[in-house]
Image (cartoon, rainbow, N blue to C red):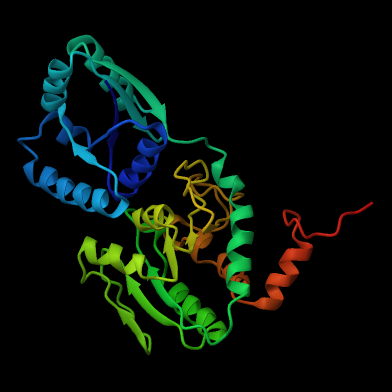
Length: 316
């Protein structure tokens, strides 16, 4: 029996569901190495993970099984032999040590499977074109249901209050009747006229339902991004350039990613800004690029002038 094993939170879980579907093998999940090795000590985390797994399993119509080392050992005894594919984002000492320990001490066959390639983000500009075209065709009186998800697991991914104000202004300049809701795990202390702010007030289930009903999700790099990609929701994501080698590729033609991949904010000598300012997410450049999605003239200019556009006039 071959199984797929994944550690992580909602974004990790969603992308592993897509991998499990593609490979046609069952998915087993646990939040982290500690819950995998010591489930009794971390029972609350295990219960929270089970709630999340059941919710994602229902939404994406794919079974997700919770697992720990003891249950994996029992499974290997029951079925005779289990081949484990450990799905990881990038090689780490922890993943290598876990594979070695399971092979040597538990006699469980484990291999590492990387969930993507590090050049994936560089291919996303073609998706941006598809999203631009979609919104350029909509009339200005379209009553779009827009959800803005403002926060991620790391603070440096978050959209600033100024960016949210600008995003709302850009959307309303294009779609007068747009209904806009701000969501997030934490509370965003922002007040904008006729914008509903439910951030920090709704459950995970309610947040996912909000995305399901959205005509457009605007988000930072976080779990709801990957959920929206899996559900085929039109999405524009602001991705921090400090993660240029990230391999969390949203597998969907409906997702556009805004990020300056030439900036590497992991380097302390980066001249653009300090880590706290998040220039690569909240600076003028990303907002200017975002505005093109809702400016018909800007879209036409993009189609015929951008080097990666198939509509560009070729030089003979």
